[in-house]
Image (cartoon, rainbow, N blue to C red; front, top):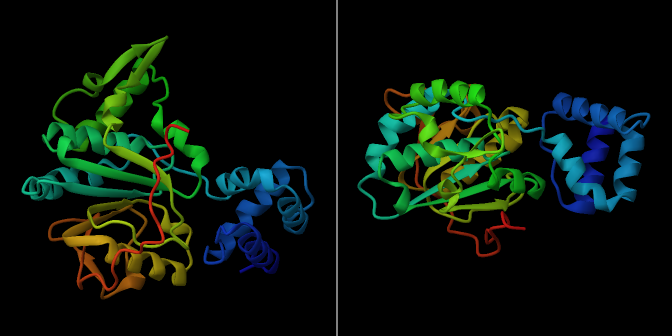
Length: 285
């Protein structure tokens, strides 16, 4: 890792507890230089000093380092696999737990809630939607206004992802556009969770974590895959993004049969739930 980026990661962790020490060096350095330019600072060293002297800007800094990439039914192949392989399996459970790690603006949480509703499973579900910073949670808990053209764009991916209606079935008029039905989030808890440092808090039947770990170095990837392994209930599955694969967790995970985005653990969880971490729903704050 770049020496200046490594120094920033160490001091930011020591002062604020956010751990970027395991991020890919090039990716972290580029993000830090971009943020320094945005703040009209000379470089990473000056950004480090600025960060330590502006504790009220911690969430702003974290949000800019971990730029979210998300959209409704993004990479519909993954949602199609969930519809075909996961939802039928979940139908046998009286209570279903899903963890969406790195939920960003919540678009994929809405997407999953729609598919669970169509499968008749949503009333049995509890969805934990986590992200490293709470600044994104108000956006995630409140659907943005969507134009008719945007609705049609989303609908195309929705159908490819296994949807059986029209996505307009889940929106209501709002101003000059439409908003997704807030009832889709009634079983969702948004909260802050850091994959680099926080521990196991649930036993999930399905974990979503898509295109988050592409920014992590090898050691941190191994750490997160171990966390996911320990967080999955018996028979649970992990859904990853198109640019991710548990290469460094081998032989902990293998692709589920007939799938490209779904993975199953090859060994049972090694550790129990950790009482030190309790997710708190902050979506109403």
